[in-house]
Structure formats: C-alpha cells, structure tokens
Length: 280
Length: 137
Image (cartoon, each protein chain N blue to C red):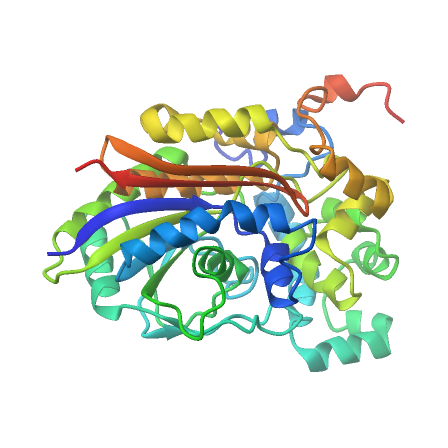
C-alpha cells in the first residue's frame, strides 16, 4: 500500500529560482538561504520519496482570470515549466503520477471535495522553486510529482479549515492506494510577505514563528484562523499559508519536527521551512 | 461573516496600504489584467513596446486604466483592479523586479527598500490598522 511518510513546507519565492538559475547561490545575499536547506537536501536524499504531492499556487501562469479553480489537481504524465514572461526556468520537466493522481481525484470527489481535474498545465515557480530547494539542480527530478494548485490570488481563497480537512481527505486517498509507494506532501508559499501597495515589505517574524509552532503542535487551532488575520499580520500574500494546512492535514495528529529554518529576506519575503515526519 | 451581496468584506478596509483582490476589483480589472497576461508571449511584448498606446486599444479598458499603464502608476493600476501577479508581466516586460516595483509602490527607492528588507522588513507594529497611519503624508 502507499504510505504517507512526511510533510515539508517551504516558501517558493521566484527570486530564489532566479538566483540558482543565474549562478548567484554563493553570493553573500543568497548563501545563508541555500545553506539553510543543506540539511533538508541530505534528509530527502536519504528518504527517497517515490511521489510528492506538491501544494502550491499558480501565479497567473497556467490560470488567468478566465478560469479560477479553487483546487486543481494535475493528473497528467508530465508538466512543462511555465514561461512566466522571461522564458521558462531551465529545470527538468516535471513527471507526474497519473495513476495515483486519478485515484486521489476520484477518492476526494466522492469524499465531497470537488476539485478540478487538469490534464494540461504548465507549472510555474510556485512548484519548481521548492523542488530546486530540496533537490538542487539535477538532470531529472528524482521522483514523480503530483501538482495541486490552490487559488490564493482571487479573494476568497479556501479557508484554513477547508484546507486542513482537504489534507485529511488526501491522506485517506493515499492510504487506500494499492501500490507500494513512499509519498510526501509539500505545502508551499508564505511566510509573511506583501508585494503590493504602500505596505509592501511587511515581515512579521513573531507571527511566523507562532504559526510554525502551531503547525507542529496545534494545527486544529491554526485551521480556525480567519483570512483577515493572515492579511493583517502576514501581509496580503501571506495568505498563501493556508496551503500549508493541506500538508498538515495529510499527516498524523502527532508528528515529529525533523528540521526548521527561517530566514529574512528573500527579496520581499520571509522564508520559512519545516520538515515533519509521521511519528510511527 | 460577510453580508449577502456585500462583495468587499468591511474589516479588510481597515488594513492600511493594502488592496484586497476581491470580486469587485476582479470585475473592474478584468481587461487590464488580461492585457498584462498577453505580455507572456514574446511577440506581444514586442508589439506593445513598439506602440504602447495602440496596443492598449486592443483591450476594452477604461481610459483611466490605459493612462495608469502608460504612466506605470503601479498603485493606480492596483486601485483600478490590477492584480500584482498580472502586473508582474508588465514590469517584467520593462525589465523590473518584484522588489523594484514594491519599492516604487511604497514611495521609496529600491536601495532604501532593499536595506529595509535586509534589516528585517517593515514591522507589523504600527502597520495593522489605518488608525495607526493617521497623520502620515
């Protein structure tokens, strides 16, 4: 049977991808950030997941305002890196896992989570930057990836509670998949950041730290947090953090915190990263 | 909870210097944002650069929205329904970064803004409510 072993959250700042792609990872600005992911790269190289369900948001790349799915699951065999206006990132094509993806789609829809099935979707920095942070710059990504795009651009995004419960439905789906697969869930985006308006540049380290703490020990409390608090305390784009609750919902109630990293700034953003393993 | 028929949740209005991309703004900014989306193609970027005003005529925007684009009034575009991830296509066409445009929207220079970020960013204290911004210029 498929086994969900661990969850990872990380920010997905586009400038991080650009720094890697342009060979700037060793500069004084970026070196502390990439150093913070070295233990994570070692951890995942030992863990060797077969499939990652990667929760992220599309940034007006695959979806414009024509169609705005709240939850969109990539069921294709592969996903091309998106051209976000300056040419696609020169990273490997993302290989999907159509069998597990379709199984999840069917299972969660019958479980009353009516997601959108997507068979043709380019994936932008929201998906490829987390892969780069955990795997570096390989010729091929070392595992298959199921993209799960969440709308956090058009208000309202799904509630934290909906995301948390959706994670639980994904877990039930993975648990019922009849193949021996080692599965991880990534929740990406955040932490505090605001990219627009006179309040741009907002960073709230104290709030971010409490969010990370609660993510580990009290996710049910976190799931009750209203959108207003995300925007007020973590900035207009900090609301991306609801996506982390999908990851957390997919894990056991009790988890083991394996690693945590927090860094300010990456461009406009507070970078937060945590690794949680199911405690059994 | 939101009242039925009320598209802008009131409490968000109290957050200073912040525009929520809600239903009303999405409807208002649809063509502005779809114009930005067109700039993801190299040939469209070239056509826009060759004659910006003529290119903008292809999209049924208001003249106010067109003027904001031509003047690169980023806060103006946000107020008129532009969304930052769509506007990113426009400032990328101009060769500007997210950080550069964020600095412009705060009325700062890129250098000062970058230093603020290195120093830990804009603190939440004093920036949670419009009441805390009273008296600012």
